[in-house]
Amino acid sequence: MPTVHLLDYVAGNVRSLVNAIEKVGYTVEWVKSPTDVPVADKLIIPGVGHFGHCLSQLDQAGYIEPIRDHIKTGKPFMGICVGLQALFEGSEENPHVKGLGVIPSRLEKFDDKDKSVPHIGWNSANTSRPGQFTSESLYGLRPSSKYYYVHSYAALYEEGKLEKDGWAVATARYGDQEFIGAVEKDNVFATQFHPEKSGAAGLRVLKAFLEGERLQKLPEQPAAAATNEGLTRRVIACLDVRTNDQGDLVVTKGDQYDVREKEGAGNAVRNLGKPIDMAKKYYEQGADEVTFLNITSFRNCPVADTPMLEILRRTSETVFVPLTIGGGIRDTVDTDGTKISALDIATMYFKSGADKVSIGSDAVTAAEEYYARGSKLAGTTAIESISAAYGNQAVVISVDPKRVWVESPDKTSHHTINTARPGPNGEEHCWYQCTIKGGREGRDFDVRQLVTAVEAMGAGEILLNCIDKDGSNSGFDLELINDVKDAVKIPVIASSGAGHPGHFEEVFAHTQTDAALGAGMFHRGEYTVKQVKNHLQSKGLVVRPFED
Ligand code: 1PR
Image (cartoon, rainbow, N blue to C red; front, side, top):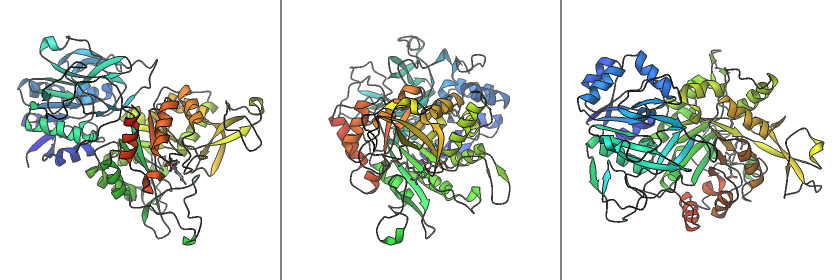
């Protein structure tokens, strides 16, 4: 198999990129020292974490000049995400750190006045202006395709600025800001999106770069004009995974977090299938992301042998959309007494193919401690250490709230909402109580307190479950979602209660949620992800088109 050199400067989460490269017929050779760079024919620099961290790592290890030389010699070079950003002169993220300076421009933070930041999800990369048709595609980029982005800083687009120096630029729109999604000149190609996480559309781009197919004729059908729609509506499939009473790892699903059968079957853990097979099925149905939640910790098992690692490794070989893993991400003591930090556990997951980790119970404890310190950061929490190493977009906080109804707001010190769904005694107000340990323990702490604290600590996204709604098939808790969206700028994923495609339409229509997640309705085979997306599309909402 032909080879490509990959420079993994932080030993980060590049497993999915390696899998994607292999999938399109290439093998990876690792660049282990600056002397390996001149040997490389095709060189890829993937992006992990922060601009400053990336550039200083490259600088300290002596890679800057060899990379510049590689580019000057005219050999193929590709930068992905922060790998694209490294080509610029600098970034607002770390103003004192110099970029490679190959592209004469700088990066800025997205404006969060009217939108969530980071920009997470599926967006375009168009080489034509909106409304224009194009007959050729640059490295496989198509106007109708969507690509997976995750970043807070971007090269904002100024018409003609780079083009006058010979750069070809593909753009996307986020809110009212147009930014660079991909850029190309001579032997240099770079994408702000992750081709390895962008399904078939992304694999096509990666293959075109590796094959050196700069321009391809677009298929006649469909002859799509470039659009400027912005992010698509993200639909996520979630798999709650645990060992059943026989010791097998199964996908399960609870009703209000109770995953045991109610009648017959000896009160067994509900078994809805095998995690790897189900993840692949949802990918093939068009899921925009797949989330695994390890809902019980695997006690009596060394951390390095945690079965979830193998599940991630195998899933990332066939699933080319983002994978999130949650459950048990906290500082812990291994079976042999060794202390293992949450960052070490996250690193194992990232190396096994995860793109994001989700933290539940530990986030609640950390947030309580944050307020106890007078809203001061500790610098040592799992959230802070993982987001410092991998970027805040890699840290999701999974929230497990329960409604507590009250007669009036003055009956509690917690933040209440006026609810259209009154309580058992007609109470018209409620607050949302945080729970830990899979809903088993309620805390004197509300969801608003939690989400604002974790945002300050560096979390990148909120996975907003709702115990009252979980498994109910009665629709999402719109009041909860609106309340949380009002409190934070980071993206929110609505979860719990989806029973049919109309519930997804409802949550996108009546809240500002950034994504919506379903579980039981998919696992029981009542609806496919594709049906949900078709339904959204039929209602005029933009979804990522499915591509083979
Ligand atoms: O606390 O960091 O170890 O993480 C544990 C993780 O496991 C948390 O993310 C927590 O939400 C999850 N979890 C723990 N126990 C359960 C349980 O069900 N007994 N599952 C559990 C949470 C919620 C969603 C579910 C949606 C959608 N499940 O994952 O998929 O509610 O369901 P639906 O569409 O069928 O209504 P830590």
